[in-house]
Amino acid sequence: MRSTTWVRLVAVVFSLSLILAACGGDDEGNGGATGATNGGATGETTGGGGENEIVIQGFTFQPSTITVSGPTDVTVTNEDSTPHTFTLDDESVDLELAGGESGTATIDVSESTGFFCRIHPNMTGTVEVA
Ligand SMILES: [Cu+2]
Image (cartoon, rainbow, N blue to C red; front, top):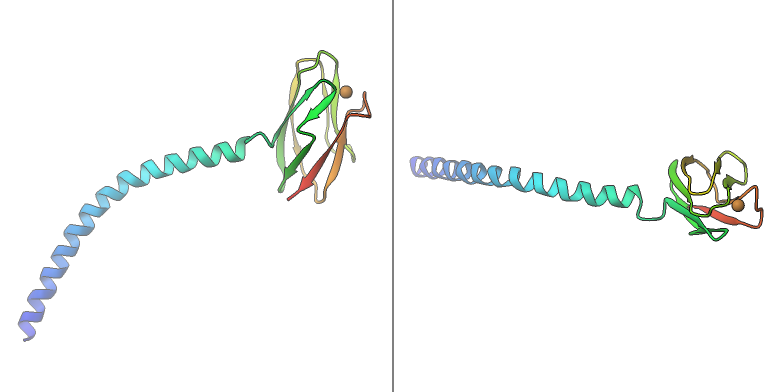
């Protein structure tokens, strides 16, 4: 009885080690592929998605509302030929952009605020905190 159990145990352990070895090999392959896929997807979402990029076109900020969660880098591109600024209401960010120029600033606000262009104060937008 005991010896039979022991033999079975050895057989099971041996089988498991074969299975684990096989799976281990597969996992490495899959792990790499999955990691790359996830990394790329995450990078795209975090890096831009569009939300962290503002284009100034035709004297308007597009989009005029962005959402941040913690300190967030925002790239602003002025596609007009006229100079504009991207200025937070508290002026903690104040990008001056000549026509065709772009700049990046880190928005770090704890509650929703507005932004505007100092040259054209009717150009406004909103930063919402998620
Ligand atoms: Cu302007």
